[in-house]
Length: 115
Image (cartoon, rainbow, N blue to C red):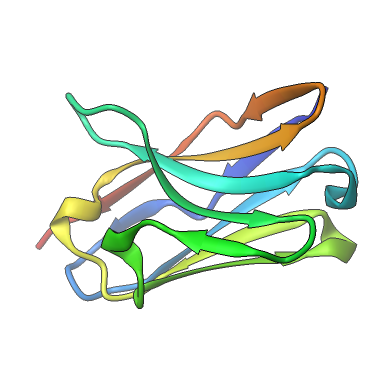
């Protein structure tokens, strides 16, 4: 079972930046897809960005040009750099790992964008 620990959330003003980190308990080479999802109050969880073991990256349209997903294989960590944050980006952000044997989630980290 993969353990995922997120960090880096917090409160920021509109236009600000945050970097989320997701540390995995095993080598991320063994994980087919890692990604970030978010869930705002009263809304369903939605995909933000994913990165495959082969390096393919996909973003939701609402974050293209503002967010960047990346990974550090040596640290077994995936990052989400979030720039030009908007109030509508406020949500709990979850790290996700997909392997052939299962899907795993972190505990989530709160991001609040407000003036």
